[in-house]
Image 1 (tube, rainbow, N blue to C red):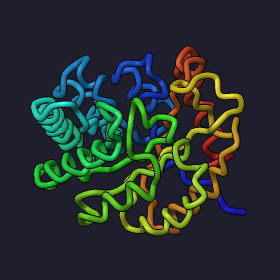
Image 2: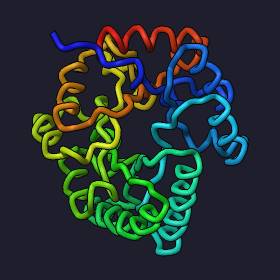
Image 3: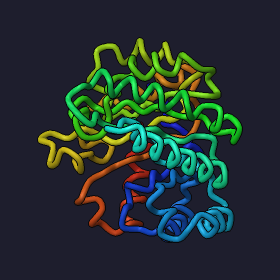
Length: 273
């Protein structure tokens, strides 16, 4: 039987305890013995980048990623440039917080032309690569489940993400494998192998039945149908041994006391991931 991953790889993706501020999340991780944290930009904005950096440094935590950049498609050239400028700020934030990964949620189409929107994503990434590389940051394309194609991302399979990323070197553009978004894909294991050397993030949660909410419907590991350990083994076989982020967007979990969430998260990580 495949062994559990080391706790040394466990990361709290901050959205899992969304009611916590960055300081509360950092202190919670320290109490729980969780060594990594993935920081969300709206939490950075609440207190500013310098204070965010100080909290991270004082806690001794490592930052696995900053979430999120992307959201490239827009109706006008001016709006698209605003998105590029915001992504540059996200790159600067990632570099300042000591992570080399900016997760890209690529964005929906501004109209019905989904192919054109995907072209805008490619154009946006191309514009960002030199700036990101100069800051030591890799752009991690995270494909989202097809049910989010209309409102969150037109990049919906790992195969798509691979094709986009392969235009660049692995240190410039990589892919993020989130089990919630890719578990269903009949090509997922071959696409994970295709991403060898290019995987910059691995996110875990579960797909529960019935799903309580399309956006806030992710479950705690072990509560759903995803073959978590099989997917984790696959990304390791493709060369990824970095931090494993627990990323759960779920109102009931948000309403649970944060320390309890982290305790459950650790137990389920050991048992199911």
